[in-house]
Length: 304
Image 1 (cartoon, rainbow, N blue to C red):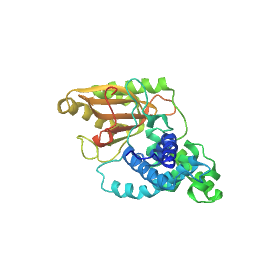
Image 2: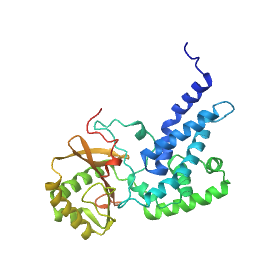
Image 3: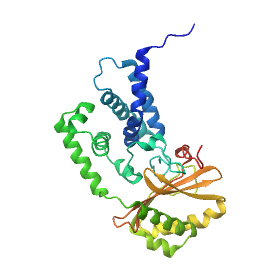
Image 4: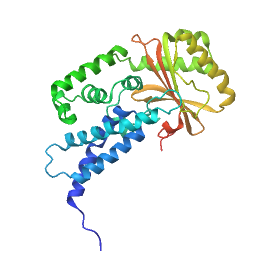
């Protein structure tokens, strides 16, 4: 005998599915990890399915509130895990398909990888307020209800977070064509070990982050600051990489909304390379190389 469908359960499922992309975007921008985001969404679904839709006037706001609170709890677990992480930690990149078709996760509001790195320096509460207000456009009064704070307290946190972020990364957006040209120029110089070209395209105060999680060699165990050190590091990679890592193939993809480079070894992703440009768009001031295979499991060479 077949089971009779539960209308309440079906309604709860439909509402959750309808808002899942929004929830993914909010949680991912607060955590920078797809795996942790999926765990939080599972916890959110369990809380929501137990509650149900009855008596909920605004399911969207209610789901965001559940997700944000689960995310804040998750931050403690993430922070403990980072204490034993080998080398610099970078967010997990969201990489578009080769034909430009976005994964559902990429259709949400996602900030650049460079900005996600800056957001790591905020407190969990500051980051939640910044993401909800600056990225998703929530009013301070709405955020106050989500976080069980007063609007005045939320405004104070928002001001502090915004000042911190803007001090480290002024708001500007390089033209996509400029980004693509700078990306291709840098990759040619880096792969070819062209020191003169690297000196030209890297800003004097450039910083290089290489996140291999202790599972890729070679990687730097600390961020490398300054053009001279960065050039030596990149030239060394080019010299050693050809012999130690044969068969690397380069593809250009959109990563967290920006043009970037992805290296593949065979059909497996090897590294994602993202650049943060100067306001003029002519030099690289931040270079992020994610090669930890655990963070590249969602990256596919060809469309599945």
